[in-house]
Image (tube, rainbow, N blue to C red):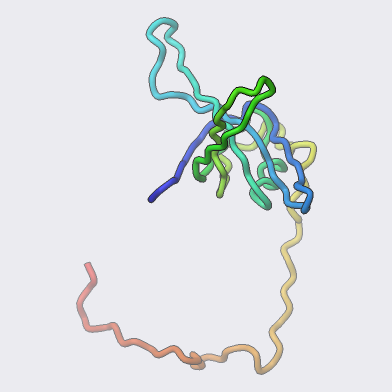
Length: 156
């Protein structure tokens, strides 16, 4: 079975980041996705408004770098939940559980991150030199074998 969704749209409002009682981050947000056709009556494009939920690092990433109006591309799966509303009526909620999120537009005007964004480090990370005896030397391939593939024929 397959349950995979790929969407691209604009955030309707800033994502809402919460923590579960166990300290797990979860971000909730909605995106507006334009339909491929225009209304015959008004000539305007219609949009679908889709609820999304992102957990852990994905949710933190979205709440940190995306805000209302930003274009987002995401991958995930569709999930349904049944619940009772305040009047006791049975309802079904449809939401996308986001696995991956991507920037789908350029930086906002002025290049300013959102208010809760943390900047990327300006210095590259420093790496330590490996300890002697722990690195591979030239010609030391461990359990790998060299394969002779040059038989004179090109692969295409």
